[in-house]
Image (cartoon, rainbow, N blue to C red; front, side):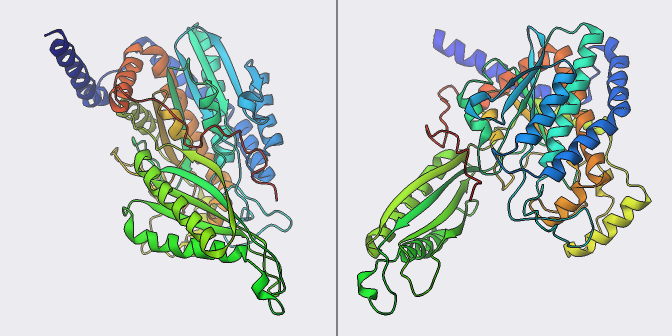
Length: 490
């Protein structure tokens, strides 16, 4: 009987949590006395916008790759230290990772800040394709804006807390190597989020939205084949081609695509394949990403990929080494946080272009091959909905250990995809800065709400526990490997 009563009580609590979503959307502010404080928070961000615009563009020009973001990380740390934050550098065994905290006690609200660029894509801040000579990397995912915008929000909240004698801590985590390096996973594994009540984040985009979006779980590895070199014409029988191993694996992996769920993703690049056609290559390497919404299903596909790789090595007479590079859980959505973030995003409003920005956007949009003109979307707040994204992020691992909510803002011209030269171009202009300021304002307001409303934190925690399930135990998909600090070095 006691067990039945406990189950009934838990069911009732969960039901009340989900009923609160709609009520919270339209309800009054929990602390009416703080209304003027919210305006002062926004006014602070307006006064200091140029500081963080400049900070973002400094990091845009640096365009440092994952785990190599020494100057970018230092710029953020320096700004935060100047504003009275306590800095811990090199956390989780990662030189460019850091935490910056202000305040004492609880609650503890954390913001995330990324700052790594992408390799092999370069572009000037212009609306026509123009790579920058001698600069092979670029902020094609807008992480320069991510880092600077989150820092602006954290600093604004810190001053608001001091003015209003707010109890608790605001923490900003500098999180390196999101692009394939899984920096946050090592930070989760090191226990950095164990005392955090809520985590907030944002990401550059071509629209403004605050959805409880899921992502794909992801695992990657380098499959390294070793063979025997020989003269490809005079003594081919003596050779065992490592490239044959790679190509055999790729052939079978492409056949596998037909027999996995349609929401799965499988992609690769050959990172090494030999140097000369007349030399049988004794070493070759292929780098794979495998994705699926559910970690358990991802593991099944991964096991099949390992079988394929081993079969390729066996069939070509080569040996195989597999180095797992990174692994991310899917993002665990939190509607309790999403509705509050959406409320604040709506209050802040979207992006408004001036004449020069509109001309830039119109010229750049011609390169996007859009079926219709969607300029103007930057000023619209998208309706809130549950969505399934097809990308992956190490924020997913954070979301499985602490309630996590986020948003996207229009830092790019409407229709722009991440990881493109168009994203780099807009991100290096005032268009990117304006979208970043929308994010900073929304994050600051939402952080304020969390400090003032213990019930909001409790609701997000109850939903978090319900979605994870009683039996959940966090395990990093990348296993027990150490951070691959050299993964971007050639």
